[in-house]
Every structure is written in structure tokens, then in C-alpha cells.
Image 1: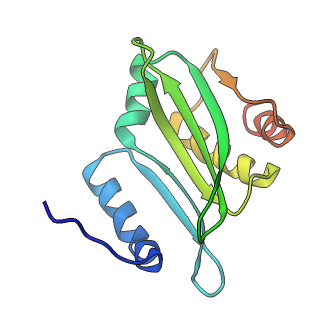
Image 2: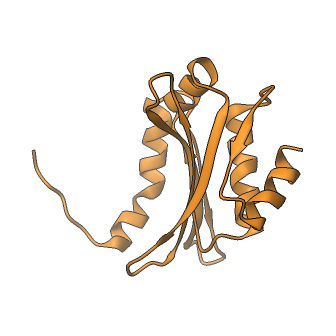
Image 3: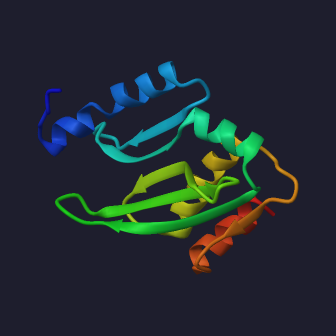
Length: 142
């Protein structure tokens, strides 16, 4: 196995190819990249197809969401949604990498997640009760 190294900038430049290959080789994968006017990376969302299918078919209809701050050269936040299967194992179903955790960023994340999972009766959303998440949930999952 050959370990490949590169710069962070090279990694960002390959994100489109990575998302293309995710969608090509894992049916149902959803990936969005938003760029600014200079075609520079702003934020992204992705959900792996097999994880979404597993959630819809086999997991409890409980989604746990939170955000975490990114450290290092490129600051920002990662918003994520996970579920638990019948063996209490965690299954990640959606991610968003964005500049910061705001109501707008949570709303966009939840809209994309809703596109992936569809309308599910009796769904429960678990959060840390941050105001930005609460407003977004009311908007997307009224």
C-alpha cells in the first residue's frame, strides 16, 4: 500500500472527483459542492447511498445531529447526522462542511438531508437544543 501525501489545497481541488466517484460507485449517494464567484470552495454536503438505504430500511427513525468546530489551517464547522442500528452501532448518514454553525447552515444541511431520507412518519430528531438547530428543524421538518 502506498501512502499518498499532498497539500490541503490539492485535497480541495480533488473534492469534485471524489464526490463524482462516490456517486458513481455507491448508488444513491448525494453530494453537493458550493463554490464562490471565483470558483473557490465554500461548503459541501454529502450522504453515502448505502447509509441512507440502511437507515430507511433497518434503523430506528431517530436522527442525532450536532456540529463540531474544525481546527487547523482551514477553520469552519462540520455538521453531521447519525443514526443507531439495532445493535446500537452508530451509522453516519449526512455531513456538511461549512464556514460556521448558523441557522442558515443548519437549514441548508437539513434540506439536503430531507431530500435524501424523504418524509418519514414518526421521525425523532435529537440535538443539543442549540437555537440555530431548533429554528432549522421547524423550517424543514414542521
